[in-house]
Length: 270
Image (tube, rainbow, N blue to C red; front, side, top):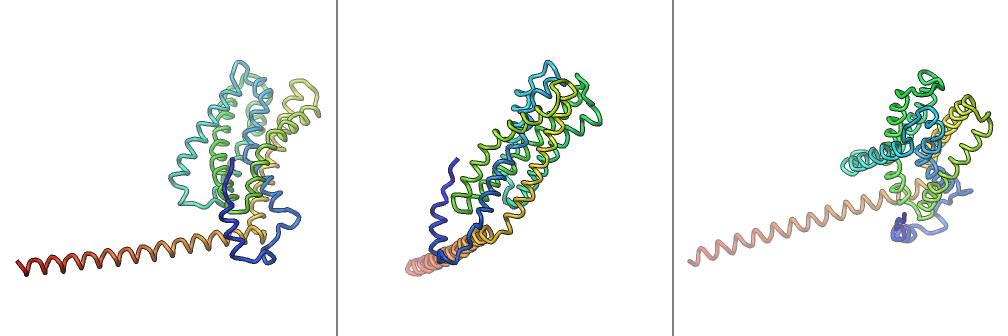
């Protein structure tokens, strides 16, 4: 995915001397955007990579295909809704709400194991709840993915690259996490249950880190600087639009008055 931010960056460079622009000290902002890139596909990858656990609990079900179809369906519907009503909310709100939905979806799995499934095979009520949780992930993905790319697009292109790189690393990290949690416990039914619960708890912790990181990065001087530049550009565009509208309206009104005068003169001659 490529986002063209070169024009905006060049404009920004013309507005402020280079030595007066805030620096991304220790690449903190870059690292956080990379972390957010990891986070917004982490929940979905967590469900898909735990297919061994779900297949054990719910035999004779197509876990991976069911999860994928439900996830994509809810993501698509949510994206259409966001396209229609995005102007009524900010990317800051959408991203935070999306990550909270990821946390809720991930919490459902160990919670259901404790209160309902309890490691027993064939408790298909838990399967339907898990499918609902993956639908919640789809909604969260639509909120976060659409908004974080737009948010990073206001910044120099390296931050968009950080998000995209984080997205690619997300799948690798989830696989490593699953392997590690499985290696800790015995390779039996009891060990599978415990490793899955640990796996989802760590995934929840990753989501919480993403929430905190995103809210922290918005307060960094370098990010506030570029956000302010974007707001100034939007305000200037609105002012130019209003001025152009006023000129156009004045010109149109003058044309109407001239037409009326011409028509009256023509009538008098007749």
